Amino acid sequence: MIAIEGERATLTGALTLANVNAVLAEGERVFKVPSLTVDLAGITEVDSTAVSLLLEWRRSAQREKRVIDYVNYPGNLKSLIQLYGVTDLLAIS
Image 1 (spheres, helix red, strand yellow):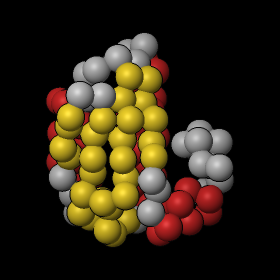
Image 2: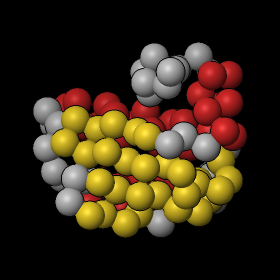
Image 3: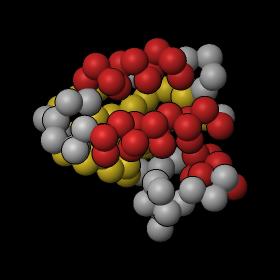
């Protein structure tokens, strides 16, 4: 689900209630670099928990004085982020 190469992470597959706890734990384990770009293009299925996960990773990074950026939002995830009104928090243009 999460592949890390240097300061870039790639997420693939579904990001839903069924697996969000496992993905959250994996992210907390591997996202330890000072600055990280997370590529979301490989996400195939989402629900509202995907938005919550991205917000939690952002809050966690801020608490630990790290930077996390997200790129290549799939359309279905972008739509949910816009629906919940958190586009500014997740830097969607």
